[in-house]
Image (spheres, protein in one colour):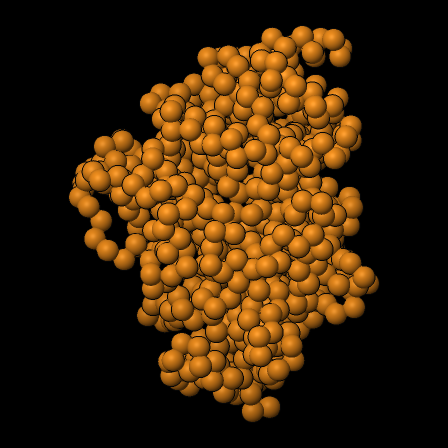
Length: 627
Ligand code: OXD
Ligand code: MN
């Protein structure tokens, strides 16, 4: 076998690259690469080390083969995905499950043998005529207990280039694991290309083998389907974490800056395109990560790291007013990959909500674009896609938090769950306890769908911990693991919900984008026991005077009593309807739901009904504050 592996490697790797690979001397890794070479049949293989020379080679290749276009600002490039490859393909993302085992009907899976054959068939010869890139990256800070080594094989330099921005290097780290079999493997091929775009998106597949910790992805380029270490690794990590007693979450990690230079770390889970990145980038605060966090307990303290070191963020409504820090980064010389924006004739990127006029023509994901252009169904094609992205490194940002590379991770003071909810949750609320936080906030999270996934937008969907798309264990077990995480913790993080999308009777949003700063600052004060709160049937909400002060001090705005009443009124019928909706999902679809979920829903329902009996269906926070 070893002889055969060597022969395969030698047939495609020149001596320099053969030496680079075999210097790692990891039999499982070498077998994986040889097998992928045999399967996908690349013309050549390039093994990337951590050296700047190799990263520059990848970047150059992306430009040379047309996957990226250099822009006018130094370090900026632009990439386009095909018109039908603009988001995560949930329907064709499946877990490969050994015959007889299941993850429950809420998670998409396929029998392992048949599924593996299907995806391997699609990968057969898929790299013919192209170069395979062999890249090593690390999830989490290097040398830390959180770190997971990874290998990515891809024929897309755009994918490898994005990973070099988003992840810590892994070649040297891989040396240190010697012959350990403990690492994640990703094999991606964009498949046949037409004008640098994956042609066969109808045969797009993302298949996740949880047992062998391999993910296959084919006939797609969109980062959410192809960048192995992002959502593909998250699915593997959730499974691994569940075996080892830690958590892998779809969460930002940020430093919230309280009085007297105090910094309190928060993690926050929001479904895609619901304010997660912009919260982690709030003015005056510092970012550790915007998307994926691992959480572990160390000597009774919950600590967390950002798995990544970069941001693959949505570039809608990024303007100097809403997102000054990102806007500055996107207009300064530094390494940035834009995707699916509009390029004008001067090669300048434009995106939706950038705060200035968008040109009437240019080049976008549909090719040459002009105002009024329609798609094959007659629908107008927007100048830039709503899920257009930017990719940049966090250390390049002014607000990078020093905890980013701390191998111990940052101590977590608070956890925030937020969704796109027009009708039910108040803008910010602290859960009454850890259990209530996990069950009534995290496990009951719903959100209206967005452009980050393919499909209809604006549909209210259940999305527990904002992690439903990525959970790779039965959902009841996942909830239980979150509940159990509290064990042996000396000071539990407080759990909050936030809702930036609440609307009034007239259908208008009740808050501006800037207000979210206030909710996060209030949560920081709660974690440090600096302010009192009003107890409602659904949790603890801010006292009016504290908000009025925070608005004045931080946004220089007057926060009226009327605003407070509109925003923090407890909406009993909406909350009851939500409990019914979510409970039905657990009863119908999640056979392993822990009993405590149902008893907690019952208690919440009783509290809501009792309050309605006393105060009516819509309860002003002032009525409760007086008690
Ligand atoms: C992302 C997503 O790209 O969740 O972060 O879709
Ligand atoms: Mn995400």
